[in-house]
Image: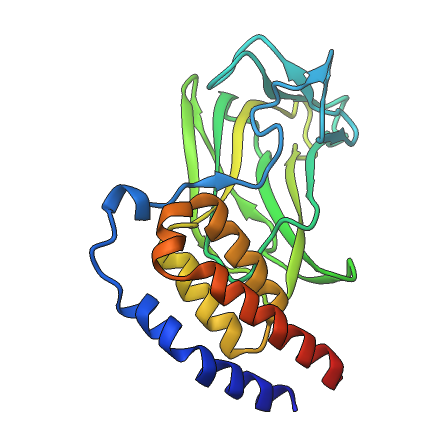
Length: 259
């Protein structure tokens, strides 16, 4: 039944979608990605004393919100690890992104790092992204990925085209810093401007809407349409987005009644 509704929906909407797919003459500036980030307090500017709002600093030697250096603004996250004897030290920076991830879009993950020490033998710096569905169940993760910065200079780390599993709605981001089990083990680094950006250009949104309608994922398609109406209001008028939104709501109701 769901597949039948998807086919009916696609046939009835095909004139609108064909017009979208074949539309040319998009203004380059209008159609360019807005690179909007879904990470709040990305530069650690909001907070009180050592704590940054919407971030968790934790583990054996927790990071600090610091005003001693920053890539932009006045604050950054500061990690300084020093072993006591040969006991390893560890620090975590954690961000939870609730309900703002749309698996239909392509994302780019970026952050800036300034290395104050390269770190002793065994010192590692890693990031990890875990994905969660609407029921807050873990879907999968990127696994731990190593990164490094330049000594005494801010360097941007760019992870393009982040693959997001289907039906993902939330994410957990973890930065992990850990020393080796050696005498005098240490590491020191600043982190700033952490961003997780979606390509929300007209082309990207239209392609995603088409894909989600074809899959009968009407709730996601409607959310994408809302983004398009908000980000590209003038272009939305020319490609009939409000009409499409109204039709999709009717098919969503049919889809729900059929379950």
